[in-house]
Amino acid sequence: MPAPFPIEPEYRIGSGWDSHVFELGRPLWLGGLLIPHAAGLAGHSDGDVVLHAICDALLGALAQGDIGSHFSSHDPQWKDASSSGFVRHALQLARHAGWSVVNLDANVILEQPRIAPLQAQIRESVAGLLEVPSERISVKGKTPEGLATPHTAIAQVTVLLYRSSALTTPRAAPHHNV
Ligand SMILES: [Zn+2]
Image (cartoon, rainbow, N blue to C red; front, side, top):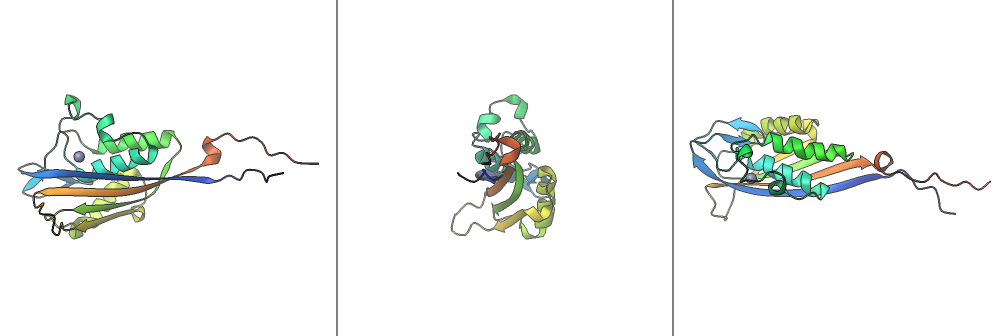
């Protein structure tokens, strides 16, 4: 007879991508951190390109659509909304289904400001939102060589989720031959 079904961990990977245009005079939010800069990112919400990509990565791992299907850009309640609320919503969806974040890796592609001096603060900010240690969060800044996008910020995120199948999937008790 087959061996009793082992208690196996389940994993889901998700990816997210977003881009926003810089606009003079707007506050600049990246990863939930307010950054002193002459221009911020335009958008219906606060324009936090990193948090939007994180939200899409979480929703992608859950196969539950994308940020636009949960938070319409035509809905006045999201006008200038803090994007941290979008991430919290996606995280709650994950938790309700038993998932927790293993790690997250983000690439932030823009010319200015330089990400390197902000890296530690952005990691802390994202880790706080996702309620994981910052050692599980990676934020890498890249300059958009050859893309001719000096006024655009791009974020690309990969996230890994984990759950123990024993917590979520009822399994028949193993049979024992006696
Ligand atoms: Zn966005």
